[in-house]
Image 1 (tube, rainbow, N blue to C red):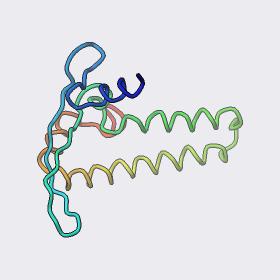
Image 2: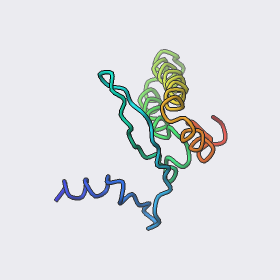
Image 3: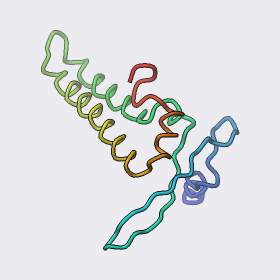
Image 4: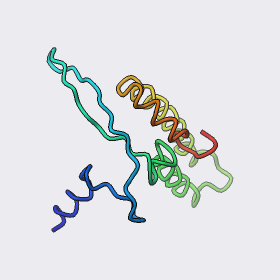
Length: 126
């Protein structure tokens, strides 16, 4: 039963937002080279739900979790917040690297996606 639910919830043909509306997607094509052979591949770029707000929305809970771990012992100390600072810098840098990599991979599809979802991590900020 669980396998059935997972399969149908992750199937590209049944991507649905909880409100009952079809998800907004971009069907992207790209070329991958493996063992000297070029293969055309297809992928889906999701432009609704959380991915319609920011391209890397899943980094925010990671950063918040690190803040919540540091708070209980961090009163007046900087050391417990070192991990928060490190993780924030790491994820912001990674978001930029991911965007450059995806731009090279998807080309004009990624440009279209960035127009629809203009923010990387924090809406209206970055």
